[in-house]
Image (cartoon, rainbow, N blue to C red; front, side):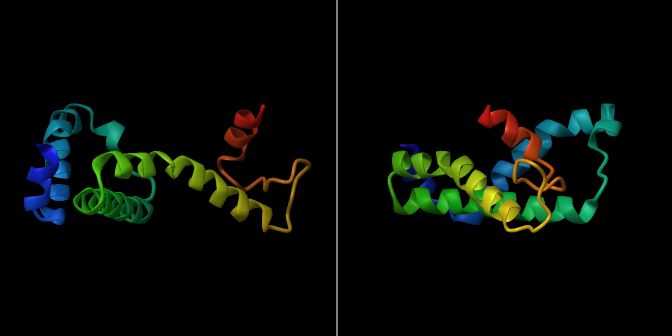
Length: 116
């Protein structure tokens, strides 16, 4: 029933509605505790927001084309691809530390912990 409803609504309208509801739910927290929502780098946050909106829009577009279970299963594989891309980006560097990961990689400690 949900898939039939999503197929009739345009993809960007569905993604916008999802973000609008989330923004309305976060609004009370933004006014009561504004220090929690301060950004250190607005340009990075803008890129992250655009990428997140694109990901949500592509997920709704995928649901319109392939079955919901397949789209969800493909979405669950994204952490695997993120780790693979992280490894390729860190191993291409010539500046390596003792275990092969760049010290400048922000999540190299997390990857080391996952490997142990």
